[in-house]
Length: 179
Image: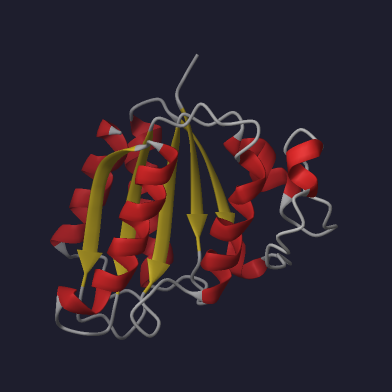
């Protein structure tokens, strides 16, 4: 049985640099025989967590009727989780943050996830612009006791496709093979 990886991509720009970086990761993972499921959460109807705790008494099933249930079901079976996002005002996109917050539903049932990784793109020329997102990522993975498989930060990206020939794409492929 191959390893199962879930990728949550928060970029609202289809075909942009975040999508391309995630695609490089996925190509590497699939070349190593791993099963990958990509969710472009920016294209999905995902509401914010209401903090109602219904999921705690319903075996991890959220009361909200939106596009999140298949994501939660996939996470309940995944060996690894990869987050991919451009940096918007020093953090992940709001679309990805909604999905992350909704993983609260899994607290009562747990997941088999052991490893996680973070793929980041940003227009700023400094990795410092991504530090808020990295801090949040590290807090989340620490909370869930997930091992960090790697963080890739690609800076100075403004136009779709600029990531294609960069070292970060090669590193994403390698990370996909290794995770």
